[in-house]
Structure formats: structure tokens, C-alpha cells
Amino acid sequence: MGKTMSLITGDFVAKLAKVWHRFTLSDQDSETLATMLAPMDDAGEAVSGDIEFDMEPSDFDIALEKLAAPRDKS
Image (cartoon, rainbow, N blue to C red; front, top):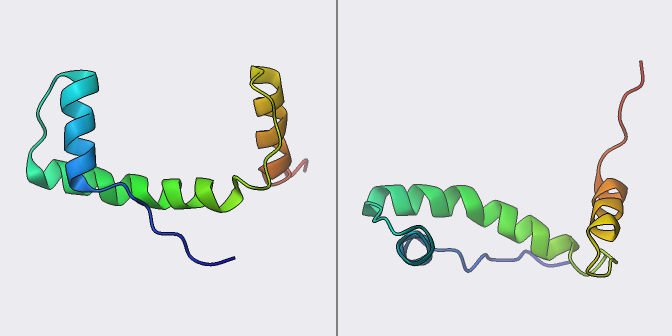
């Protein structure tokens, strides 16, 4: 599987904050948030083809549990 490149940019984050949350971020804050969010977006894209669930919340929870590392029961 190839490396994905997130489309989340500082500009995108700034617009999202303005439209959805009605506040303005500084350029530095927008870039910092984009830098934090982009790897999560890439990780989600990388596994999205392997996740199987319907639109039911319980199906989504089960799909996430299958992806999670097993808990150490000691």
C-alpha cells in the first residue's frame, strides 16, 4: 500500500474553523492543527478499505475494535 498524503492543510483548517465554529485561527495555529490532523487522516485513509461496517453505530464500534491492538490482560 502506498503512502497517502492528506489533503488537510492550514488553509482547510482555517476555513473549517471559520465556517463550522465561527472563529478565526491564526496562520500558525491553522498550520499546527493541520500538521497534527494530517497523519490521522492518512492513517484513516490507509485502513478505510479494510473496514467493513454499515451505518449503524454498533457496526462502527465493532470495526474499530477489530483494528485496535489487543489489551494486555496481565
